Length: 253
Image (cartoon, rainbow, N blue to C red; front, side, top):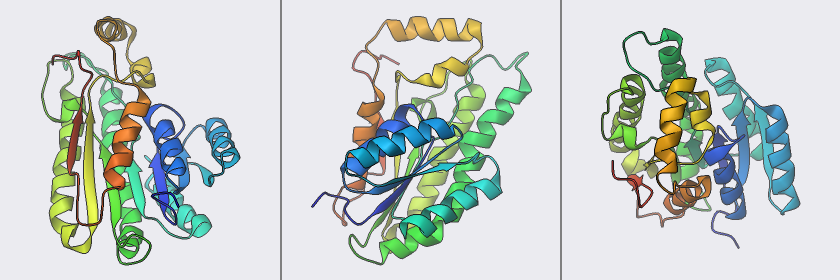
């Protein structure tokens, strides 16, 4: 019997990068997985891959910045898979650049996805997570929020991104204090430089600087972060990993 047999996990941003790797990993751990993202073709392919490996997955196309779609994604997860034990709030966007002359729509996109969408999915998932925490097979449930080293330190050129990731950390700690005695655990994962699509959304001049920075080190891979998430949600009931900071060995900032 696998570690998470009998559980259901929902992963946002599951169509690529950390979300995709996490969905595969949790499925291999025995969890049925709801794959939530906007790119339906990628979700369908991933669901087929998981099923071929003997797992269970449902692909849910949704733009979770729309609160109704976020709630519908959670409702469909529970309707099709029967429950919800693990929520991984992974979906996010990193749009770096100076505050002066910044495209304000970039700020809106980060706030909408990194903060508002996370809150919407969490709000919809909360009663189901609390129910799972009171039932077999584990009698514990998990909320995992993906932050960043940007949630711990502030740098010029990333002010609004810093704002959103510090917000994730603050919300997570308050959540922990509110629900710890009800065995709903919360873990924050703070990766450093990871080789994913995240930098593809940057403006060209900023992307070039970031690519140069990345080329000077061996970055983390998405699977490295997925392994950390798996570690968090497979701890025994009496133990919680509240915060996990994960950097490439060569990253010095």
